[in-house]
Amino acid sequence: MVFSSKFSVKTKGFNDIINITENVLDILKTSFISNGNVLVFCPGSTCGITTTEFEPGAVQDLRTFFEKLIPADDEYKHNLTWGDGNGFSHLRAALMKSFFSFPLIDGKPVLGTWQQIILVDFDNRSRSRNIVVQIVGE
Image (tube, rainbow, N blue to C red):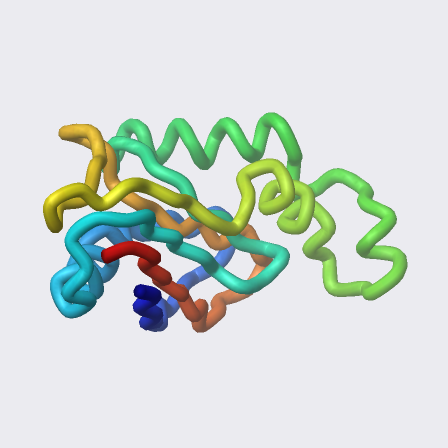
């Protein structure tokens, strides 16, 4: 059986990190699937989905990490092509990836105690992001 649903999240861009765990868990409750795999996906080339302990220190560390690794104010060829100034956001998103997957066993998500599912919007402007949740199982 396959169950699909989606929800939207408003973001601020510039490494906006949003905890979407509860949104995903709410969808799991409506799926009537007990065992399977859950895919959380954000269409777009300037955002990412991953997990972390969603607390202020870890969130700031993640923002700082991406800024050090791929600085927003560097020169990127993408910016020359489109003039939109978000070359850095495409690189950050490519590094993180736009999906996260986890098992569902006996109706419960298999996540660590402090593991929350997060959306990171790397773009240089606010956005409305659509998040797709697809569950394959029985």
